Length: 453
Image 1 (cartoon, rainbow, N blue to C red):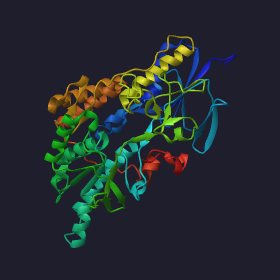
Image 2: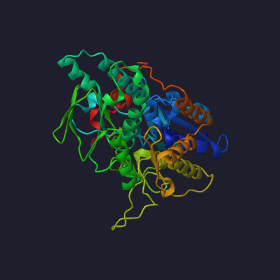
Image 3: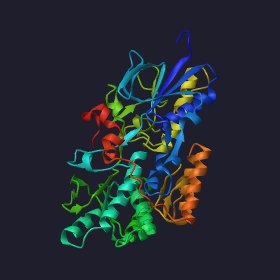
Image 4: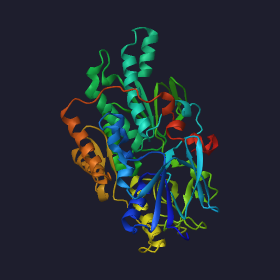
C-alpha cells in the first residue's frame, strides 16, 4: 500500500456490493482509497420486481439502477471474476475473451447467488429461471408466444394435444419466485385475454410444485395458507411435497408419478451461492463462504464477504442446543444491510470509524399476488388483501435505491391501473440465451462447479 491509496475491490454489483461501495464513497475522505467494482452489468438489478417485469407491469429498465450514476467515486470494471489468489492478492477478471489480473488491498466478495439446480434429467435444457432481466423478458415473450400458437392450432386430435401443452405452465418452487410469478401472470392474462380469438385466460392450466409442505413458508403458516387459498380459488393446481423427476420439451414428470404436458417450465427452486465461491479453496458452509460476525473471512487478511454467497452468523437469532447460531437467510434485506456493515468495517480498517459485528433482525417480508391480493408481515404484523398490497408496493418504493427508478416504477403501476395492460411480444431474447447456464453465466466456471441440491 506504500505510495498509493489502498485499493478496495468489490466483486458483484448486487445489493451487498452496491451498499458497501455507497457507504465507502460517502464516508471515506477523497483520495484515501481507490474504490473498484467488478460486475458484468452496469446496473443494480432490483430483483424483487422481476415477476412484474415478466408480466409487463413494470418496464425492465425501470428496475435497473445505474451504477455509474449512483457510485460516482467508483471505478467500474465490466467483467466477471473467475478466480481469486489470496496469496498474490489478485483477482482474475474475464472481459469477453480476455482475462486480466487486478490487485487488491481489501477484497469484498459479493457475487450473489444463482438459481439452485438439482441433478434432474432435462431441467438444465428445458427449464427457465427468473433471476435476471434476460430471463424475465424471455419468459414474458415465451408465454405470449405459446398462447398465440395455441390459439392457432387446428381442431384435430393432434392440434388439441399440442394446444393443451402450450396452455399449461408448470412452476417449480412455491417460494417468492414461483408463487409471485404464477399469481401475477394468471391475473395478467385475465386482463389481456381479448388478444386471442379462441383462447381465454381460464383455458390456461397453472401448476405450482414444491417439495415443501407449504406455500411461502418464510411468511409463516397463516399467511402461507392465505396465499394458498388465493391461488386455489383462482384455479391454480398447487402440489406440495412433490418435485420434478424429469423434463423434456413437451412434458414434465413429477415425483408423484404424474406426467404433465407443457411447453413452459419455470424453475424457482431456491438459490445457491455463486459458483465462484466453490473454487476459492476456502471454508464454506452449505455452499456459502464462511465469515466472522464482522463479515471478514478467517485466515485471509483483507478478505471480506457478504450477501447470498456468505455464511454470516445471525446474531439476532437464538442459538441451538449446542450454542451455534444459524446463518442469515439469503434475502435482499440481509444483503443490503450486510453491504453497509462491511463498508463500515472496511472504513474502520482504513482508519475511519469503528468496526461492529453484523446484527439485524428481519423487519418483515412481502409478496404480491396480483390484482388487489398480497400478503405481508411488516414488523411481525400479518396483513392480507388491499392493505398488504399497499404495504408491499410502499416497501418496494422505499427500498429502491434511486429516486428516478422509484418515480418510473410508481408511474408504471399508475399507468397499469388506468390504461390497458401491455400485451406486445418483443422477441428480443433468443431461447439459447435464456437457458439457466447462459442467462446466469454459470458455464464460465465449468459444469461441475454449479451447486446442486
